[in-house]
Image (cartoon, rainbow, N blue to C red; front, side, top):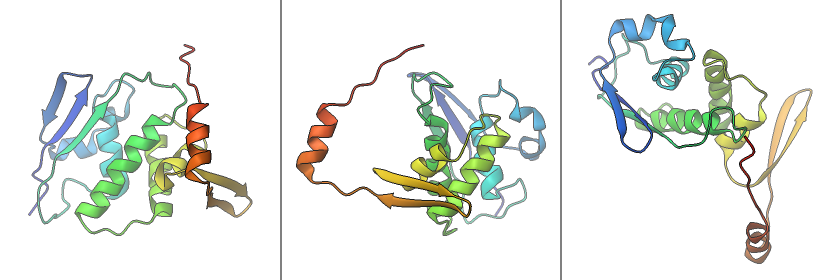
Length: 165
């Protein structure tokens, strides 16, 4: 069976865009420009290795809901969305991607989307949780930060986020 699913992109609270990918969807470089509504979808499928000729056991719908967080906010939302999509496809099709695989794939997808950046967003999004990330010449090491529920509650009560732009 060939890829026959539809891909839906939800932008904002009430706008949904849906289409069925054709062979040209997978080969059109125009989808990697800054104006494509489906740039994230194509980047995910590209790094996972799903092409117009990929035989899959079933069709699927890849639906991404985008919040009102501005592009370039510095919150790592593109890494979070990409990592979630890669992980979901890995589970759906039994691909067995590790956290490290997902980090690399998200990094490549962000380069395709021209959102760039370093590794910290991809690592944080792929591993999740509250972690210390050490970078060194050999790569990186992720160590979970273990804290009591009381300390976690105190930290949460004292965090603030401001929109500055």
